[in-house]
Amino acid sequence: MFMLYFGINVFVSLFSWLHGLSPKLREHRVFYILMGAFLVLLIGLRGNEDEYTRLFIKVPELTSFFSDTRVALETGFGFAFICSALKTIGFDSQALLFLFAFTAIATNLYYFNKYTKYFFLAMLIYLSHEVIHHEWIQIRAGLISALVLPQIHLISQKKYKSFLVLLLLGFSIHYLAILSVLLLFLNHKYGFSHLLILLLSGLTFKLAGATTILIDILDRHALLPARVELYLIWDVYNYKVSLLHPKILQQIITSFVVLFIYYKVKYFRSNYFIINTYLLSTILLVSFSDFAILGFRSATHFVCVEPILITLFLNHFKHPKLMQTLTILLFVMISYINYIHNGAISEYLLFVRQ
Image: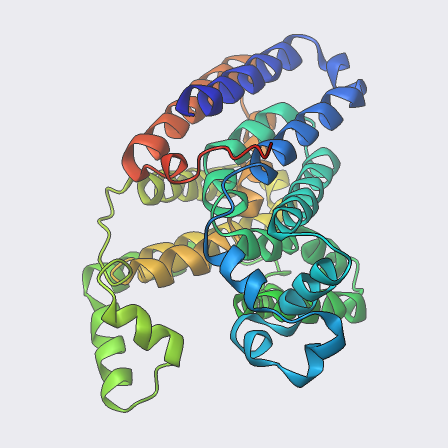
């Protein structure tokens, strides 16, 4: 399984490198469609013996959906309704995987193509982390994270009603989608010093152990949500993560590089919405890493902008092709580290029905 996943990364890396040599490769949209379709198949055919299958089985068909809302209250009305609709027309939980994989991957790839000229490099960065932890494992979180890119587009176009509709849709699928409200405060060109202070504040929050103190206070006063209390009980969720964790370290370094370019290159600041969103992701990740599930889940909601942001770097170097090659090597290495460090893919073997 690892060889298949790593082979995909190498294949996309090759296209990314060739694209650097021949930009006309971008014009052949068939490559986008084929790669997207292959990813959807890879994820849609993974093992379906997991939490989502159990939820799918528990959801009633549409004829009795509104008389039994227990699963809807647990998972979100929209998610339960989608499961119920699929079940009613005769599909099983495998169809749910395909539907969510297709929607998330198609949305991400569409906006990569829209916002960056380095499409294949953006896809490689996407493969190195997001695909594993979202589309492969947390399918609901992956879908609402993919909705962040169109939400950014709608806010930048001042289409607030459409943004609200998308926000409510996401919230009906996963309650974590409420974090997208923060995007309304990110469509602003903040000064370099303000952004630097916020990033350093996140690091200080982590080093001071403030997350543990905050959770203890909330727990004593019974102010924690029920789901968070459950996570505190289970050791598999309630653990701390070091700043040297590969993903955390990579995001910290990337964020400081972003701020350096932001300070030095004035026209790079035109990407302020994407920059602010990524810095928020890093601040959340670092600040709450002492309660890993909270830190990672809140941060990865916004990390969908990472492939776009990193490819924007290349426009500000004297030798973009060299930097592109180095970036390719870096993210192939990160893909390998993600697999070894987390064992993420080994938990989800391909499942091909007879």
